[in-house]
Image 1 (cartoon, rainbow, N blue to C red):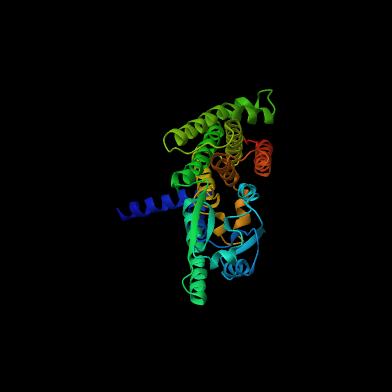
Image 2: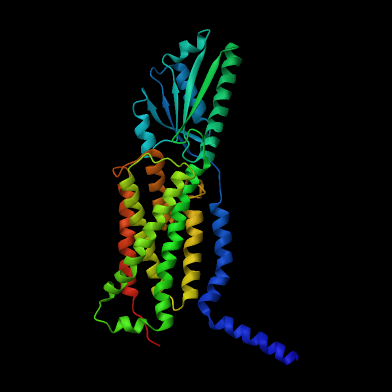
Length: 368
């Protein structure tokens, strides 16, 4: 009886050792998960880029600027005379906040009605926007306290505005990220399983003896799924707009075009994964493990990339979803056009070309 039991254990050990790729994934996955979660799951807000708008700089505005720069969280990156450039700076992502003081600020502080400031915050990410706003208000409170201490009872008003998400709706931030996640997993998984299934069922031999070139076989596997992936994108966008009331402030044509490009990138990535695997199970695990974690943690879908360690931020550049998440949020919430999204679009085009080229080169199926 015991011999049979130990024999069963030995058989399972041999089975595990025989599938080296699955064993490697199972051993490395917990290590990768711990490292990624430990470094990526951070909601710290640091290095807030702030524009100080002061029509007539005086001693008090310099004192206010010094108060802001005295904090290790704020960097006054722009000192402006008017608010004319604020919109373009927010659009380009060059600043996170703007503090607008009224003209002749020092004199206004001495007036009976006191002086006021307008604090404008990029609230595309409502949680981060709220934290930035709280930090700034705390610093302005310290400044107000110093005024009251030195001059006694000076009225000081703080008015706040949230750009791009005035009501701080979390759905505005997370739903566009979910679109990237869904398209990445579904599109890559479809093509990854498609070629792996051909290998397992032996129908790959038929394609190999056909007059088709390797690139034609790869393209033929991708094209039908482009339609399916694009239909998924349209469906998710429709749900985001009609159910979650996510606004569309940019071009619908550009949004659909960028979605189609991202679907092509994900399908190409799925083809590449399938060319490096021999079974549907390995292809599925490779797709889920290789794409799910990076897309969730390193794309900016949930956790801000700016809060990650300096050494980890360059790693996010190789995650396709990172670029698409940025594009879709900019189009939906900021109304950005192709002139502001050229770099991100070119990166996705390059990724599609690289993955399709690598898939074609790797398409050397061994007949066993």
